[in-house]
Image (cartoon, rainbow, N blue to C red):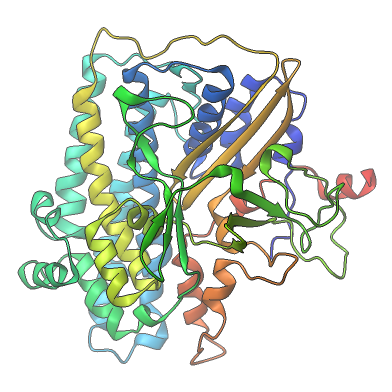
Length: 477
């Protein structure tokens, strides 16, 4: 239930399209780089920009560095701290969880605090600052790294990999972990390297029945991520992590088409000029009303994907990104266990390993002396969209430019997709489906509900992107 209204989409109206590069990163203080990247991709399309390979590489490095810091901080500072809840005091491994994951005192917790900020140093090398760096622009990036910049970034990511990922998170060598392709392989890994946190959460999590919590939608969706530098184009870039929708009933991956995106406001504090029909973001409207309606209860719109003759409410996030992207280990775990709290956290461990590997590879490919930016021709009338994977899942920005100004700007965020209200037909969003039927052992300590919500790394700030002072808003209306 989102009772806060911020009005970013309204703020952007009638401004220069380039102003969006400064405004949209302020949607969020933890994944502002993702909003910037999505904005830039939309402007690339609107301006028909050509991005040099070096520009694509630097964008990818910055995006993945931000994703890495988020995954580490979410895992240890937001999720695993609940493992020391009093519900689990009687478990024989409770002391081990406290020593590892307790806030401020746990050994892994302290390492996460220390090393997660190192990812932001990588971002700042190329982005100038973090958060809210604005070095990504349509046509590439403004940074032209010197050799020592690339060397410093390489040294940082290698140190994170050796000191945090290998010693703390997975407990063994990265290259060997990348050969883990199935649940059987994961069980063997945990016999060979039992001290890594991934094995502790895998073993302890099943004992605490996290694998029985939080099944939601039958569909996993990903917008895809990490464009290939040598094959970049605005509308259909070839991606390292593929886009699509995975049907968990038959494990068929369906092609994603952004034209099938719809937003509804029947339960949201907005009105549409055309009633309760769903609107595609290019035609989207952000018309807020005072939060006093009996039939509405949130400032979050309901996202739905039109799949043939029905509307679906998919799940997005690390689990979806890896599953749609074809990660063998995640797909095998899904076939054995289905979606659940435990697998969402396991997915983040896997993604961190992949992120570090890809950052190293992208840094290695950078070519000194070649451009990072090619100025595009600005246009008076155009439109574009940018679809990426942010830390919490699929993120999209849509821009309509008229007479050189922003006529319409719409944002769809991961938390909105997961946690939106029901649509006009009564269909629930993924998070509601994941919560319905959850058995709470102690009503005064509903930790089961907290596990489900936090496993999605929910971001209320992104969820209510739609800063207007509330009193001012009511007076206007």
